[in-house]
Image 1 (cartoon, rainbow, N blue to C red):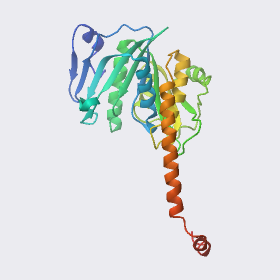
Image 2: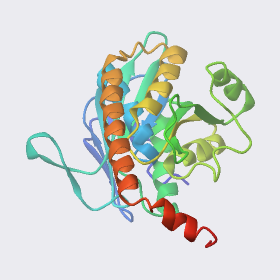
Image 3: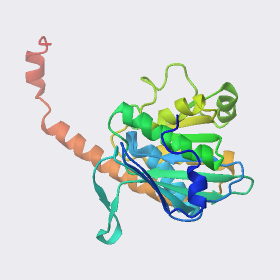
Image 4: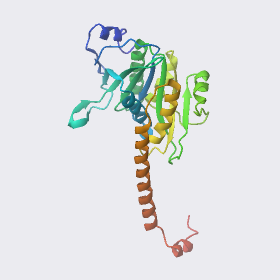
Length: 280
């Protein structure tokens, strides 16, 4: 049984501004006309490890300037507003965009947060999939970070796909599909969109950029954007991302210098370490 009324998009196309349901509270706002899409691909960006997923998709959105057409509000998200430019308050939401590509169209989704518990994550995922189904989407790309604890110089991109053909397709771009990595699997909506999507007839892949997980990581995002750019012919301008990486590397150098200074400050004297070297 769908968790929202069937024919949601049809209702919005007929002129409805909002679709509302209760328990939990779900509000779907039509911001602009619902588009007719050609063989659309869905890509999402949500907060997660190293903010890789959000950074990747938000950069693509900023570069391509797609059109906002839906906003999704749910009571299973944190009960708060975000403060936008010029101090304007906006309810936490998931925003859907569409972009008319060269050969096919795209639906992007950016979100401010994820639900806190597994049941609500399942609920949000099923709701998103229901929306995508009615938009004609059958192909899903989710994006996230794979935390390694240390900052790689050249981040790898790991993948998990719904089927072997999809895995082989992205392997050509250097995506690593492994039986053992990422350890612990893929948590949250980013993973559930692939898992539940497979059950509902969607094909998809999750791309995870290798990152320390300690900072917002544009280097990991860059590697994923390059893959998506090539595979889907998106023509995303990379120059803005390169500037972000330059600032990120400056920040890492400052952090490294501070860490080195603190380590020297508290390093025990050689005599002390030799006298007590038997202590474990």
